[in-house]
Image (cartoon, helix red, strand yellow):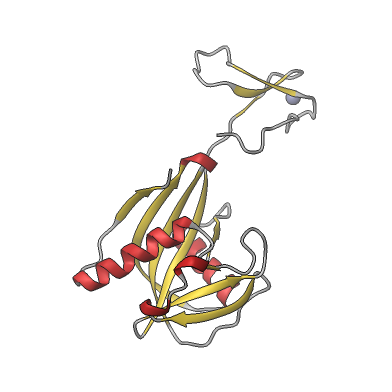
Length: 181
Ligand code: ZN
């Protein structure tokens, strides 16, 4: 996986080359051709929530690429200096203008192909007043029967929602360690 290979050294600005480091590391790394700094690249975390209110789940219609116009759970890249729980609440507020109380980590979805790990929390909405930010065209509550499965933006969201409704039917919410090929 290397969608956006590093081209220039973040320290000195010279070109990097992908090669095995001299320390016995078995993976090629982006190494500066001038100062020899090794630039490690690691997966990013995406954090979000499954906000629910009186049996319905809040989805956001995306106002940005990728997947403009498709529906998603509120989620986004974690920021430095915050916990996963704080990030999930922040994204829910930013994208849906929704206030939530987290109930527990529900799914960890590995997307190794693009170097991402997505974490979704179950979240109780504190009210049904939403104020979507610029990233969202519309935020609305869906009954399970009305979920636009063919119009969901991401497989991570579809897999998480599917487990959420399965668990709800069974009467017990579990934890789901998932991977998307
Ligand atoms: Zn350098």
